[in-house]
Image (cartoon, rainbow, N blue to C red):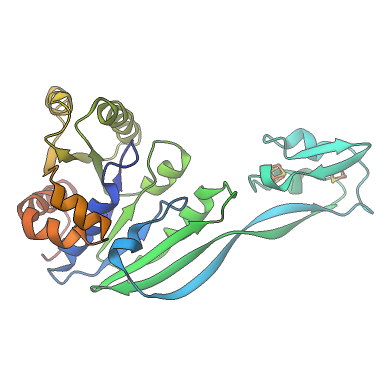
Length: 286
Ligand code: SF4
Ligand code: SF4
């Protein structure tokens, strides 16, 4: 079973919920994997603290031109939707940073003058801690192609009873790639106007992808009750409320908020898990 944890807005406590949920679900003896798909700003392992046992490079393929074979026909420039190839003085110039590795130019070149060469854009780190298998992607600074890295990460730990996927914030391509194929989506929000605005976007995404979902309100007690009203009006299940208390922030700053949260909010996590089990008809020992 795959459980994705997402939030329309960054800084809502998504990773705190992901790590706490993984730790909680691991208590029952099920095999749990935690995948950090927030590859532009991975921070799951700041809290899980799994020793990294393996680091693998991740590369995408970008075109390289054989200028002996190239006739300068311009087909590669015309097919490229990302303006990553420009014909200058009759010769194609590849702008590698703009390439999305779609392979289009390679396929249309009539002279077979394009070869695809690997370009490293990040790494995948893995290890384990507290009985949880961890894998986390880390995109290079200035690299922009996070979806292929996320897609590759999601091939890992398929044998786990439960895989918890910590998604990037927002609702754009990296998030869609992260939640694709998951069985349940936990949306973490905060009770503020910003939280509500971005929750609406995340709910629309979940509905567009036909994903079952529920909401966790973090920092409950701040802001107003508009998130509660929105969920009630739209018949959206609020799975849990985690209060805005100073102690959680202190533990968070030490990278250890999950043990405090589980000590004090185990009923909330019980409710989250039971709801997911019910909605997905999954059978996971807890
Ligand atoms: S499609 Fe091939 S032959 Fe034509 S300009 Fe591009 S690389 Fe050269
Ligand atoms: S691989 Fe795709 S994105 Fe990259 S240069 Fe070729 S056509 Fe453009």
